[in-house]
Image (cartoon, rainbow, N blue to C red; front, side, top):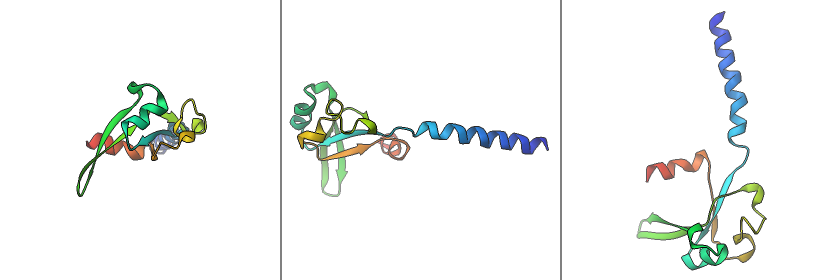
Length: 103
């Protein structure tokens, strides 16, 4: 009986903690050029360059700072939403962390 109580306790604790990890999704804008990123954020220190390997070589993209999904339409946190310079959005979280740890 003691063993089953310990397992139940572990499962219950794990179930209560997991939803807190994924409450808010992190995102950031992806740009084709450095100039577009800096134009949106008005601060070069907020933009970072990333190399992506392709079958024909390497291509560079530029990323703005991280913001949360709830601020997606807020131009203070996501100026790419209204400027049209952003070529995409990069999403963070457990699914994308393997990409960063593998490079």
